[in-house]
Length: 179
Image (cartoon, rainbow, N blue to C red; front, top):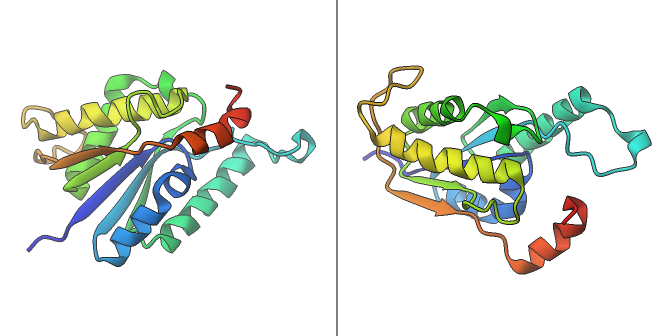
């Protein structure tokens, strides 16, 4: 029997932990192969004092390392990056972004995919884009006439779930998001 697989597709390092780290750890511990695709390295997401900002290149390296450590702690099987710039994911060429996600869906062959809802939870443009790209990629991945970069066979995802943040969480982070 093929192992159960879950693919999470999010925009930034920490989206997986803050949003559903407990759920990912639970399923990993229960033997589900959990995988993460992250659209960016979070290189623009600095919330500390400006004089301590390490700069985008160094911050991206630090956040990538943090995410790699988080993936290990959560028991996840793999981590992949789409290599978009933090804060600019919504400016990606849609067909290209969808195609990249299709390739991961077809390569990993998850039964379940989790991503952001159409509104990105609280309107973050990167979250909205990733949710829309992933939802479209699920449809394309199941279409045998859709050609991805690796010419992989079609794969039909059984379930798509949207990670929805509670009102308390949204109220907590709103001051940091400029909303």
